[in-house]
Image (tube, rainbow, N blue to C red; front, side):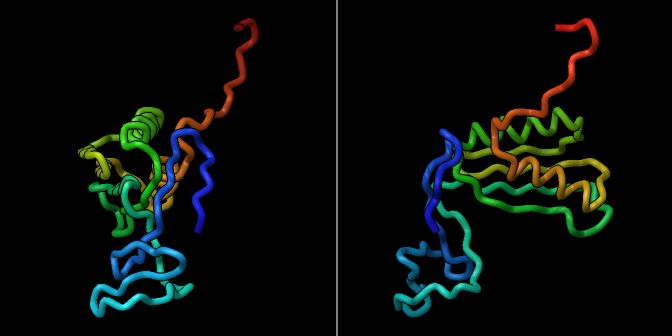
Length: 144
């Protein structure tokens, strides 16, 4: 469960138990209902806890009900927000709302998208390495 940083702005965050909403340390978590320390089962979902930034991306122009994505990323909020807004600009998306706090970014699109299109775009916003080099564009003949 180690966080091997692949980007200079990425920082370490611990894993948290999804249901108990507590950190997992050394493969164990504290059950808040009983106060007992329990082993973390392999089949339970985990998420990145503080200081990771919680990112919610939704689309209010719903053609179906599956247009929402939530992830946690271990980067500064400002860095992630710039990346997300660059995707909005690059893809010329209609944006309804953006709310950003130190540990949260909420993006609500207002763009007609299929579920496949939404998840492709939301995945680019949430999972593409921020600052990753864009695809190179071939020069037109005679341009330098």
